[in-house]
Length: 239
Image 1 (cartoon, rainbow, N blue to C red):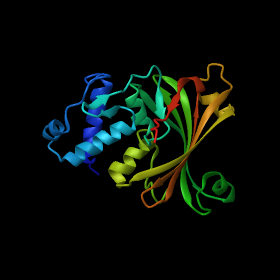
Image 2 (image 1 turned 135 degrees about the vertical axis):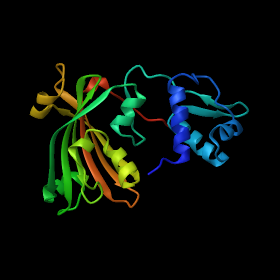
Image 3 (image 1 turned 60 degrees about the vertical axis):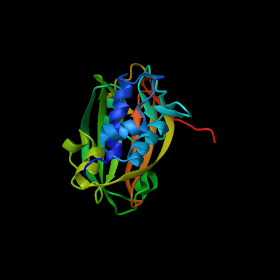
């Protein structure tokens, strides 16, 4: 499925901001100029700018235009409010990501798994364990459950690239909403075996339930992070 025009513009401008082609304090080209540059409607440009604003890259200043307010993070930052794959987050943070699938099976959801994940008893899911290496260090251990009827024909090879990219570009799925919970938990034997813990005995655990445009829960994930390597941020607006 081809990316929407506004998303192409958003990603192009975001890349230019992150590479300091438009540094903090600079003003983006006017809406009229952006329409000419990208050959699109004013509404398309406005949608791309609105997304940049929602993610803290720019701010509209009355009488001055759209100003860049993005500051390069000093360590990897991951968004609380948005939905992005780890591949996208790594690219945004300038990190080299390698994913290794260490477990892959099909599971029929029972009452216990239903209570933990939110899937209905009898649902068939893919259960994966994935180790995520960032700049050569094993920093994240993912426990992923994907609903087979939505994430069709998933394979370990696809999971080592990007499941979200596969869903959107190959399956034509639309990922809409996620519900997250953050906890701190002691390490377990699997964490010790696979992660570079560097003496840490606890991990930051991010649990996600993610839904598609039909409101179907298609993913439950528990991502176990070495704690000092990550900053999770949220952009808020005063109303």
